[in-house]
Amino acid sequence: MGKRVQVTDVIASRIKTTAGNDVNLDNLVVYEALALNTLPIRQKGSIFDGAVVSERTMTEMAAMLQRGEGVPIQVMHDTKVLPVGKAFWAEITRDRSNRPQLPVQFYIPNTETDLINKIENATVDEVSVGFQAKTITCSKCGFDYLGPDADFMNVLSLTCENGHAIGKDSVHTHVDGLSAWHEMSLVGKGAANGAKILSQAAAQGAALTASGTTGKALLLQLTASKEPTMPDPVTVNLSELTGFASQLATAQADLATAKKDLDAKGGEVASLTAKIDGLNTQITELAAKLAEAEKVEPVKIDTDPTLSFLTDQFTKLHVALGQKDATAPKTATELIAGITAAQGKLSSLIPVGGVATGAVSDAAKGAGFTNAAFKSRN
Image (cartoon, rainbow, N blue to C red; front, side, top):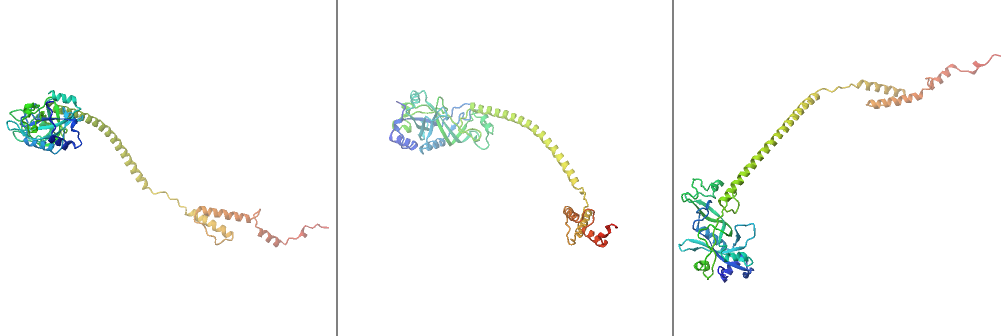
């Protein structure tokens, strides 16, 4: 087919540098595209309206591929699906006006028959490169839309801090330096001016096709991002910026709702706080009363006379029992127990009638008892 690039030894070596030595070249279809140049970008209503990409940017992109760092080929910048191919080589060339341009060689597996047919039939003949620039500056004053002084509103309003509006009075941006090259997409309509699929005749003058190969020119749709304001990567255009504004409005509404909820919860917290304060007051009052109560001297019961009486009784009872050396206990309980025991012993020594055994014996002896007193007269 006419638009395919013949895989020469040089091209085969370039592919293997990117894809590895084990790649099966018979399964690949190679194309060449003019991916980027320094003509003004056609992207109305965006930060890239009339933007010019520097030659240094394209040189850094070419160097990236020449180091073997392949770039995925996507369809319509849809990075949610797997790539359909890979860009593996690029270098800077010059057009007839001596302007720098960036031809890119890429391959697609021959199993992508539908996509290959669309390329061959020119149904798909444009591309867009998605990369991050190091700087995007105002053509009038050099204000950097990716610099520390820029914010989301500068991009949204397409106006720098000095009031220069992109798209008015010939104001545009300069895109310089490569921060990251994310992908190159096959698209229905690109943004790089003059980038079309090369015809057989036009391809003869391209440096990458010096061996007689032909290629496909792809259009550029610049992408850039500035963290954390925008995702990485992001295609900057008016519709997406409008979408960001809508998301911002939604976020603000959600914030207002959350604040109302917080205020309602704040009322509940205030009520609970008041209850806690009331309980703390009660605790303070009770603590004060307890402190006053602790100051009152406890009533002391003088038990010394009782102990003295019990001790005296204990001692007397034991003397009566002939235990003059008995030691009186120190506590009332022990004294009462000792007194009770002594009383028991004394009771056992006194017979019925209250006279001790010794006393009866002594009386008998004193009376001189005799049976003669009870004898009858004859």
